[in-house]
Length: 260
Image (cartoon, rainbow, N blue to C red; front, side, top):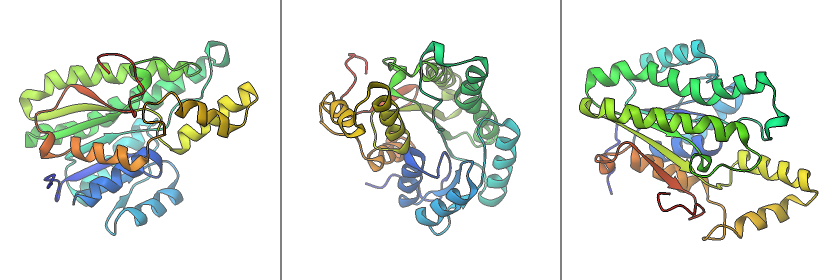
């Protein structure tokens, strides 16, 4: 299937590892011109070389609005206007209410909510001028079912979904699609860290924690990052041209709700 992504410019945040890297690989494989951003420049440069020969690495801290603006200027200058935004970042620390202070709350807001806002502000003017574009926000299954021990993520990520839903109504008449991509348990460094955190908290081996988690998933395994990246590429493509304003779940069937 030709996804119609040849020559499209895609900016993938959190592109040095995990879901972002997998998304960038899938987009590049379909012919998109990909730029990736993350904070760690050395890891980012290494990832870009592995993704494609012409993948552009632009270091950006998504919690810094000025860094987002500077990164966007660099990418637009090198590759042209952004056609596809994949807004993705790491998650805030695990823990409950008693584990976090006001600084942690503010940091989580800047990492997840404000970053989505400022990234959208950066790329949207050119999309409006062209009359086309796709905004993809990587969220979490916590937007459907709050995850025990992840209070900050449970609080912040639904705000991004609400923003995306509102934007889909505003931007649809302008030819711009807006979607959320909702991962469940995908084998990424983030999920491995969460499994280690739980293992330490309950005094069990991390392997046992993973086995117990996999037993709750109908497909009885964690997802592979490529499986998530391929969904991102499809949603960014012409083949998904009538999809907007929804969250697409990639979770192996873990969520129980009828609307999941």
